[in-house]
Image (cartoon, rainbow, N blue to C red; front, side, top):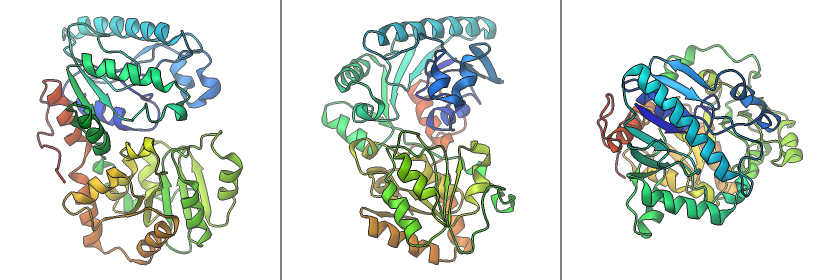
Length: 395
C-alpha cells in the first residue's frame, strides 16, 4: 500500500496529485492524505466544507481511500505548524495501520507532495519527496515564511529515499546545488476528451459569433491579467473556466468579465471540462513570468492539446521543454510580451484546424499522459504497476 500526502484536497480541481493517485490505485492500494483542515477552513475555502464533515477516512474506489486530517485553527501560524504536522502524522499512521490490517497489505511506500515536513510519518517505508511547486519561490504568494520553507525543504531532501521535481527549471536548479532529482512533469488525460466534439454546448456559455480563445484553471496571482485583457480588447471572444481568488485584483477582474464577448463560468468539475474546451479554438496559458511560475509545469497546456485545441503560452521553461520534445514546436506557440501573445492568439484563431492537425495535437498529448508520469513515480517507489513502463521523453 502507498500513503500519498497531497499538496491539494482530492475533492478540489483534478491536479497532479489526484491524477497520479488515480493511476497508481489501479494496481496498488493508495491512501490519499489531504492537507489538514479545521472548523474554520470553510470560511475561507467554502468548496472544502465537505472535508470537515463526516468521517475523516473515506473510501473513494476499490483501491483508493481519502483521509481528511482535522487540526486546530491557525494551523500554520508561528509555533502552530509543528503541532499541525504532529496531528497529521498521527492521523495518517492510524489510518494506514487500520487499512493495512483490513487489506492484509502493509504500507511499503510514501509520497510526500507537500511543503509540510512529513518525511518519516509512516516508519519503515520507502519515502519519495515530490516537489510539484517551488514553494520557497512562492512563499509570499502563500503567506508563509521563506526561511522556514527553505530549511524544511532542505531537511526533507536529505532524509527522503528519493527526490522528484515537476519541472525542468527546478531540476536544473537543484542539480546546480548538488542534488540529483528525477523529473516527473505534469501530464494529461487524453481519454477524458474522447468524443468531446459531440458534447452538448454548455448552458452557461453564449454561442460565439467567431472563434474563441479560452482559459481553464485558477485565476489568481499566478495569472497575468494583462494578457487576458489584451485578448478581449482585441475583440476576440474569451471564455474563462475556473475559480477566481477573491483577493486577486477584484475590481480589475470584474471589469474584464463585464466586457462584451467575455464569459466567466466559475469553478467546474473536471468531468465537465471537455464540453467547455469544445467551444474554443485556442487555449491560453497566460502565466506571469515570475520565479514561482518559472518553476511550474501548467497542466492546462497539455489538456488543451489533448482536446485538440491550439495553445498559446507565455515563455515558461516548461513550455520550452514541451516545444523541444518531438513535434512540440509546431503545436505550441509561446510569447514573452503582451503584443506577441495577442499576435500568436490571432494567428491560431484565424487558422481553420484541419483534422490531421487536431490528430497530431492529441497524439502529442498522449505521449505525455498521466499513466507515463505515474509509471516513473511507481518505479521510484520500487513498484512497477501497469500501465506505463515508458520513460519520460527527452528534449
